Image (cartoon, rainbow, N blue to C red; front, side, top):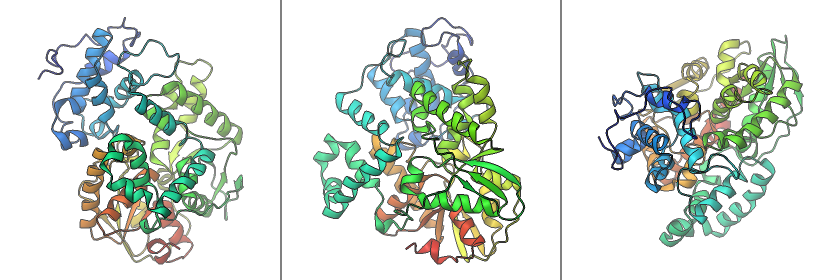
Length: 465
């Protein structure tokens, strides 16, 4: 196998050989050296499934990374292959050698789009002015709830006037401003049958019902609190009903997940430090996260801030406390009685929950413990739906194809309801199902548990009003 005119994948530097300005301690070379190019990652990789291109597989990208470490520079083609990666971590689950591909692709993305003043100089060609502007708008909006909420106004206006449908049909607009047309296509619409628009304000402390079993902090998130505030409300209610004092720190802000997974490590570190400080002041036993991408990033704080002596120990202590909502409830054990919900549920494994955090059994066991619930498996459960953080905005064609595949697999289950543990997946799957002409309601697991414990009945999930 030759990649971009280079030699075969066996031509890599010895693990631990440092000296490159891009890899001064040799850590990246060591990680890349763990790859034995066995090919187990190929059938697990969504982009390899789409195109069958070696360079769009994990082992192909690892070889490109090694080339850049050797030469100090890469090509525009290499940058494109890094951008095409969803960062879904399916390859990490499939790899028999334990290659930490997540660290490698995050490093490669920092080479593609370094922050101003970052050292060393970018080894990859700069993006086009349009791409830089689009990414600046994305990273300048989504991590800031007030800005994101303000951006919903123009999106809703476009929906009311039909501009979103016009943009979807226009090949010219899709070619000139693909990120904008993609944003219009995945923006939540009433017919997607999602619980969007309510803004219940959470108090800073929600007391436990009955005997207090734990004191937990709760991340409200960015996209979650703006687009899915009812998910946060349901999360807090369920935790309280299971005997937890729930603390909602007012200064928590963005956790930095989008920045970290996009290779903007310095930006992510700033968000991480603010998050750690906010929850340290709360003095909680655990930090509960109901968005898969956020939980994955927060469990990586120890690694992200390891080079900073002032923060490394604090980050390690914080990461040790982070738990996904379903992971924590499974550890805690249920005490609140469950009422019957006559539902067949298709459970979708969010990539950063299933592959990155390895939380797969807990959500299913929590759902199956609800009387009347039947959990059915989606045939391609380990394959990304195409959301992947900002992927469906910057790679809309590939994301749409992956979404269509996921929608077909979900429809084949003939379930009443789709359940996911990540807001991006919820939007992507709901939109992909709506495009087929057969929309299905999509909910978070916290909403299902809340409906059961509060005896709300299945209609509140199937017909949100």
